[in-house]
Amino acid sequence: MRNDNLLTIHDALFSHYGNLHWWPAKTSYEVMVGAVLTQNTAWGNVEKAIANFGADLSPETVARMELDALKEIIRPAGFFNQKALYLKAVTAWFQSYGYDVRQVKRQPLDEIRAELLSVKGIGQETADSILLYAFGFPTFVVDAYTMRLCGRFPIDAGKTYGAVKNYFQANLPKSAEFYNQFHALIVINAKEHCRKKPVCDGCPLGAMCGKRHEI
Image (cartoon, rainbow, N blue to C red; front, side, top):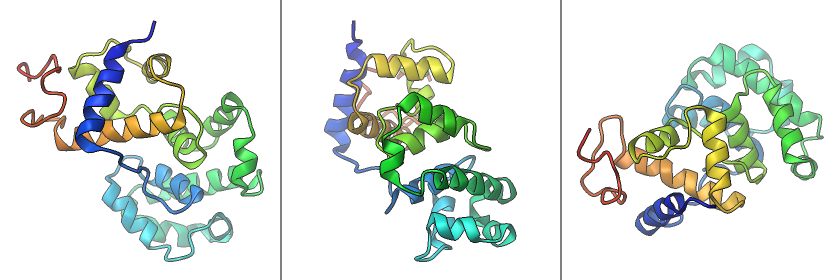
């Protein structure tokens, strides 16, 4: 039986924030790059790194670029030595599909996810971000903000990435568009209100949150 709590949370957030049209990127490949670069850093740093590519952020460019040159371009995102290797690796994976988004989207979700998880530097959150936002697969992204929501609401979804992901997917419509929107809503509310030190006043989930007066 579907848990209506998640739908109630989604509806409250959507009523407050509206359609967020997220993830911010011009191409599927830019989403892939952003998903790698955002590891362990703020999104503002990712934007600086992406801006350094100018108008030439393409898989072909990254594939032929010298590693040291790539490191300098992405330096603002931090951990640039590792992330340059990760970008090379995920670009090589994309090249195996001829850099063709349509070819990737024709693959079964479980198989393509397993492939991505075998790529150097691609963990579960990064893989699901790429699959959902770059290719439109219906796979829910679990991040620190999602875990915080579950802990504070509270939602008994489990403690591991896989458990929380499975819980959300079992209790929500199986839709890439819905997953995209809900994750974006969780993120913005975590930044506006459900911070590490929460700002409960004005939070659209305030009346429902079980932890409002305990933090």
